[in-house]
Amino acid sequence: MVHSVEDKSNVVQLPEGVTPFIHITQNVFLRRKHKKLKEDDIAICQCKYDTSNPKSACVDRCLNVLTNTECTPGYCQCGDSCNNQMFQQREYAKTKLFRTNERGWGLLADENIKAGQFIIEYCGEVISSEAAKKRSYVYEAHEVKETYMISLDTNYVIDSTRKGNFSRFLNHSCRPNCETRKWTVLGETRLGIFAMKDISVGKELTINYYFEWYAGATVRCLCGAANCCIFLGAKSQRFKEYNHVWKDGNDRYKVEQSNKSHKNYNIGSGSTTKMKSQRIPKWKKLRNIYPNESSNLLVVSKSSKEAREEVTNYEGI
Image (cartoon, rainbow, N blue to C red):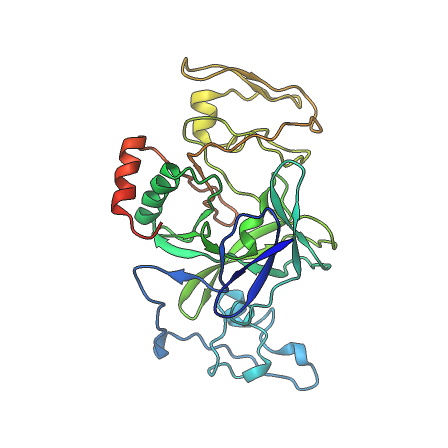
């Protein structure tokens, strides 16, 4: 049995058991419109199309490609042969949803993917950082178990909890095979998922959440990688300073009490230890991701009463 989610452009079939969401093919902006790129701000490359080599138009040496900027249709000298419009043309790799053993739904490669290849854009509702905090309170009050948020920049967040695409199913790994990269497309910053290495068909696609722990319950990481840090956010500064102690020199990660408000944990050695699935606490709001650097997690910090007040003020939940 399958059910579908639909937008104006397509219908997507989802396996039974997937929490319904509205499928979109590009970001939806709330409180503001898409930027209109001024002609003076259009980046025009100097590429020349070689008819004897169809793949010569706007590739590795293209000035726009080198600056992670897509060419603008109608302004690129290579015309329809331009190879630098992957976001606009949605040149996604073939992927497929699958049910993992302990980590819910995941996304796997449905074809062989080459290192550096564009896999999919992370799509959702683009909202301000302040609006993202308010939504976190609303989600908490409504006991929404699965939420997905990524920082687009210092001012905006992509929330794919209610509206998004299959990128929302990417799971975390301490040794990921994909990464996020920011690209400028028609004046807007957009977030893409790219392969870090060659990925064979049937392999799960993963990214590093760069989870930042601030307080509250510790969440077990179930990625199974040889270098797994055992807890999400275990390498963040506050995790180490206020709650836990690293033990160097062996493969054992020991958690000791350094604050009376926290529990003691002792994790045995070995990276293949099976861990039971654990429900992620409501304060954990996925995911603030910056390419190749750590970032901050949106954390619910208000009380339930304050959260209910936010629900009263928030429209459209």
